[in-house]
Image (cartoon, rainbow, N blue to C red; front, top):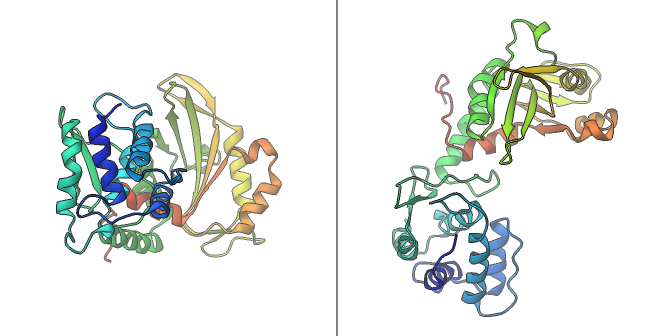
Length: 314
């Protein structure tokens, strides 16, 4: 993907604040901006717009499909246009959006705000909105903060099965996992330590298989499970079973082993529990374990377009 020099300069001038309705950024603040975008760019003191244009050109050079824009480039624009960066004369960022769309439209794209107040970009050629990988660590809008609070209340009240069916399954589907299958809790003998298994297809078409062990409470390293607190030793036994048993993928008609195990808790996974499990597993097995606790669930669910279940009163 390549933009004309004039259009790159105009977008760069939006970033550094040389355009009306954008906050001015000196060298230090330009570096801080790209750090906020999770990019390692540090301004070297050279001409601000030229240096920023070069960085944008680097991002545009990354691979992407036809009529789309590279994910990192889109993320930079989303950070730039966050409503919290509004100027006093343009509180809703309408004028800033007009300025940004001047160079974008000449390249065949249009930026717009969604119902969640985040920026989205669509192609003017096929009218398709460009999909982005949402960062769960970015600043949340007021609407997203309310959504996160509602989900937090739901997690305090839901059962383990509701956590799986209403939260985790929709979340993993949106994140691009396939063949997501919940084992259910009616016949524990059939689970082999797995509550869910799923697969992820890499761009090379290789397949990675995941097993998931879910608990709706807190995971700690206490001697026994109490109430909503689960002993990590129980999870260790179930995880070992998960990584040692085959699953059948009906789409490929093959039996395969799980490559990685997610350990997911609706509450906190304490540092002591993580360390205990890490000490029990050898190096190869440790690399197969991925932890996800309540904060991870809340943040991922919030930034992706999934509705909080409506069967609770908030």
